Length: 176
Image 1 (cartoon, rainbow, N blue to C red):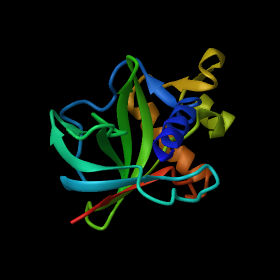
Image 2: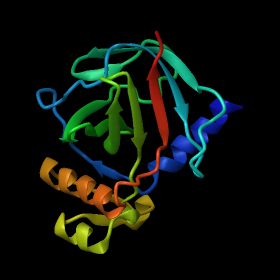
Image 3: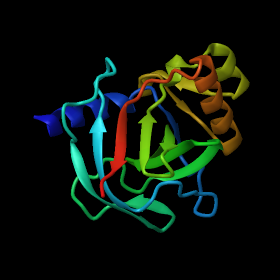
Image 4: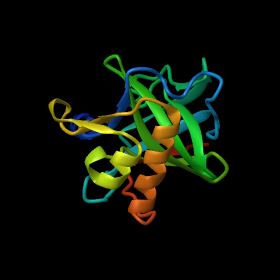
């Protein structure tokens, strides 16, 4: 039941996101603020409540400048991070031939991370114009981003426009 709920939640989050056709966080610009180790992953409901128990747990490693897991159903396989501001990172993950972008906050010296999939429609018209982002109706309001500087500016604007009160979509906790 939880796994099915997570799949539906993840599918819903893909609409309205920021994406690119080419990777904007390359191998040499990727950063690794999270420790390798065994983690539990708990997604959050849209109303801000965490699921009542983790939906996934397993070993997370770094390979090829990406976070990966050999454990089944790792929801953020092949993710790269790049710092936007101290403790705040842009996350890049490939899905169906495109690169999707989200936000990650890292805490406790790399042992805990929360994440959020920002929605392009939740960014002001002014910011979308400033960073030359075009919403694609056929993509349910998704915005294509063409370079790192535009992505960085759009994500920092998104945080600022939400007064730093960005919802949490899930949390990873290192389990010792």
